Amino acid sequence: MILDGKHHAQLLLATLKDECASLTKRFERTPSLHVILVGQISSSQIYVGMKEKRAHDIGIKSVVHRLPDTVDEKAVLALISTLNHNQDVDGILVQLPLPAHIDTNNVIESICPQKDVDGLTSINLGRLVRGDEYLIPCTPRGCLHLIHAWKQDISGLHAVVVGRSALVGKSLALLLTGRDATVTLCHSKTINLSAFTRQADIIIAACGVPGLITGNHIKPGACVIDVGINRRPDGTLTGDVDFNTAHPIADAITPVPFGVGPMTVAYLMANTLRAMQQRLNGTMPIPLLH
Ligand code: GUN
Image 1 (cartoon, helix red, strand yellow):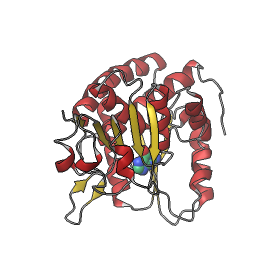
Image 2 (cartoon, protein in one colour):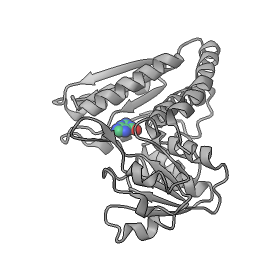
Image 3 (spheres, rainbow, N blue to C red):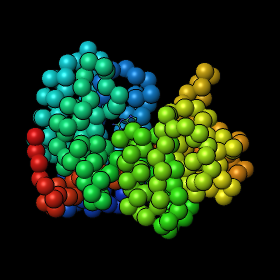
Image 4 (cartoon, rainbow, N blue to C red):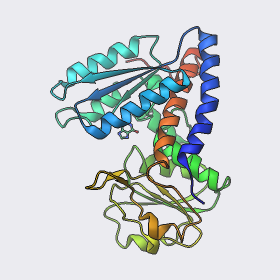
């Protein structure tokens, strides 16, 4: 079974389009997503372009603030403060990575948690730790959707997550725990990685090492989710999983591209609508505005 992210994302986007129309009617304005893009990293420009296009497709207003890589941190913080206070702004996303002279944590923490559609502020990550899922990072949410397309009930299954970033690995480990999976979190320093992954019912590869997970790492019948997006010298994309050796062993597997990627973008749209709805309904548990 190939877990076709493009297909699942299209289904989700169709329902979000309806939701967007009803929010637009109810609140008499278009939901809006503001993306801050610093510098010229080509992959970031491609990702931001995809986010803009999807937003447009479903009726979300998308604004991209392009800043030069020489911009100082204060100017980024000032822009975020303006967006935080603008009542017509529903979602704010700072595309990562930022240039080295800018403190990423300072920037992320300055985003109003009500508008933090990446779910990366300590308030939203803290809520996730507590099991209170408010605005959840989009890639882990997309992975979970694909895992559920394989099996609805993952209670008691052993999930091995390879990668420990806040953006993917750690957040996904929390989400899976919340659905009663037994979770092992592995990373680049794990000794004898395959001893862990071979026990897994679900493997999530999110470590940024092309082809790290091969057929030898996989228990027959497992579900394999590949979060990696790596560019080969010839310009084509490849994941963290060696698809050709993994595919015959796995019961379900995501391709790269068109696996997790489209789901991430779809959940960004979902989070933008959710952020608007909850902020304007006043149902956000702690209304904070920096
Ligand atoms: N860079 C790569 N993936 C992401 C993401 O999901 N969010 C942000 N903000 N930056 C990214």
